[in-house]
Amino acid sequence: MPASIKTINSYAFAECKSLRELELSPSIREIPEGCFTECDFLRKVVIPKSVLKIKKRAFYGCNLLDTVKLHDNLDYVGSQAFANCNQLRVIYIPYGLPRAKDAFDGVQVIQREHFD
Image (cartoon, rainbow, N blue to C red; front, side, top):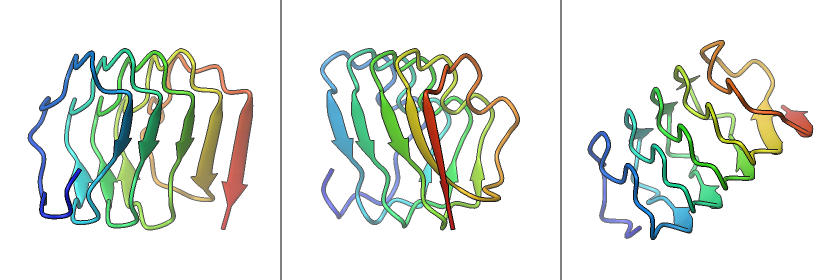
């Protein structure tokens, strides 16, 4: 995604079948509601440190997403943000990251790494 992109609309890429990998623009401040919901072939997402919020259902049902690295600049991860990501096995998450209790519902994590 080009650095000139500063915002993304809610559900902008929902159900996009051609999206495999995603490196968000370093100008993005939030990932809006449902933005990448049910992108069935999305495997990898690079979330830049500029992102402060991941809103509800942002990556809901991304069935092939397998690893997520969240950073310590995040203020909040919303409800069901990564829920039902069936292949999500590794989550890198900072200690004390504020998140909805159902942010990872339906995810069977194999490895959860906490860091400061």
